Amino acid sequence: MQEIINIQNKKVSYKYHVQKKYVAGMVLTGLQIKSIRSKKVNIDYAYCSFDSNELFLHNVNFENSISNSKNDTIKLLLNKRELNKIEKESMAPGLTIIPLKIFLSQNSFAKIQIGISKGKKNYDKRQSIKQREAKVKIGRLMKKN
Image 1 (cartoon, helix red, strand yellow):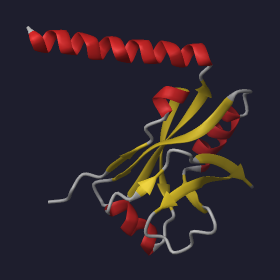
Image 2: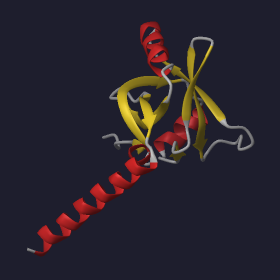
Image 3: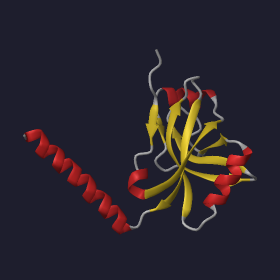
């Protein structure tokens, strides 16, 4: 029985409005997949960018990786049609491509969910904090009764 691996980018819901989501494969080395399976990956500051019609993931922190001096860049595997669609959508001003989560598929392949997102303003962030605190408060009141 395989352990479920689901590495989330915890800052996404606070910093961004996610508009569309896509799932892509990743080209990884042995040490990188080993650190994913041991859940020692940080994607909080990661982002995606295009380079000659290919999508790359930057600033991923693998704990088992020997090369701490350079930031790891990972090629993402998508169909040509999907790449063109994502590139057109991300060209709009204010939109960026960020990783949402890394998981293992049923065939034990490492996949990443990326999202086309728009950054939140400060008042949007304050509104998110108010909603989260209200949910916690309601949960506490329901637990008391």
